[in-house]
Length: 165
Image (cartoon, rainbow, N blue to C red; front, side):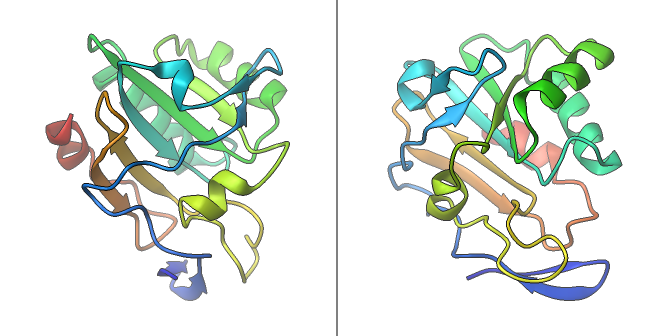
C-alpha cells in the first residue's frame, strides 16, 4: 500500500506499483468507441501509462497535454491516459484540447486495472478512483519505469519518465 497525500492529508492506495523489471499485469480498459483494450492492443510498442484521477482537473489535464506533446509523436510508443472518467468525457477533453497522440482509456467497466497496478485510492475524498502515477513498459510489457506521485496535486517527473522511454 502506498502512502500518498491529497493537499497534505494522508490517503492510501490498494497496493504498490508493479516492480521495475517485472511483467506488467494485463488489463481490460474501455476506449472512446466503448471497445475493450488490453496490452495486446499495443503489442510491439513501448507504453507510457499516464494514470490520473480525472481529466477534469488541472494537473491531470496538464500531464496529458505534456505527454501528448513530448512522447506521443515518438515512433513505437503508445501514450495511454487512464482515468475513472467516462469515455465520452475523455473524448470531449481530447477533442477540445486537440490531443491526437494519446489514447484515453476508462476504468468504467471495472477497477481491476487500478487494483492490479496498486493505484486504487482506498480512503479519503477520492476513494474509488486512481492515484496519480506513471508506468512505462517496454515492447515486451516489462516494467522499465514507475513513479507514484506522492502528492496528488503535483505533476509527475516528466524528465525522468521521458528519459526512461
